[in-house]
Image (spheres, rainbow, N blue to C red):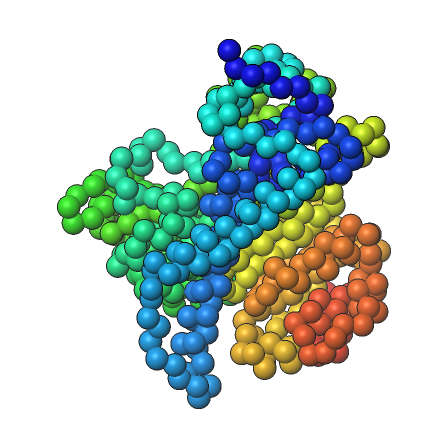
Length: 474
């Protein structure tokens, strides 16, 4: 018979939703037990996603910049790649340091961490299997089990040369030819890394363009740059089959301009993620699940069982780490009886390619589709002194405002460091700021952040460094 533990709050999953929820609850005086089946806390984001990919993207950025400096009179030798040392840097010095830090935080805050897999046996109990088998009885529960890479069955050919994002980030080698199936953010980020390390990268996307969720004018500068770095990009193209051969993975394609078949040393499948809700025994707890595997939740993050909550990728889209972290606070505040609810005006999204793309609030595409009255104010980075000085004039910053009130509805940026700049847009949208609030906030010069200020200026006429286009005479 397994041991029996009782706890006020059970958190299932130790990723960017689960461990912050456990820490917030512990800080509030709630007895918390955190169950996670990973070798280290941090979830997919820290161990196999956001963090290792950004460490590798930084490496890729340095390699590209070293090449680009030749145009400005500074020449470096060809980079020498020590793959084992690079792996060690990412896994030990980056991932290891951060996961160790989470372990110290949970220990210091009095969170009981249990290693194993939790499966519901009733609305108030789970059985844990794995390193520490036991039964846990709980008063409240937060499910934060995240998501998994989605790989269609027709591409599951049982060959380790066909990778998901987890396998690709472990850097098994640098293939001469790599196919990336999927032109979303995961595929383009990882593809950019391998291209910088020396792979000839081909991207195949079934939709008509890359990054279909983002505004086209933000994607265009990135696509132009990727076309110089990748071997090929095929849009409106389907992968009809994969076949393992001694020479490589033979890929059958169908699409205008695409060859009928190509052979690659490795294939990365990055066509999305699915909720990690299967096998949790949710039916035993009485928790509803959609056909796609999502757990329906209300604005307080409650499931249909009032004392069981769900946050992060398993609850609802978008699947973003920072969204899960924010939801964790809401769920814990609700447990404390506070009038909290999930109602953000802006959830920022960042694509960490080079250039980066970031947006928050309504996109121009959404505004047009939903017929929301809006005005688009675009400031080209060619008019930014900072962008010119670092030779990154391909970028642009745009602000979407209400035509009458000039309230900021959305902000989109493409360019170097866009991800670091988007927080200003989030703050403006959440506070209900109007464009004048942004333009009258003095921005330091010379910085790329000035482009946000100057895009706001366009709401009232011309910006200092660019004139607002005149409307055609009727």
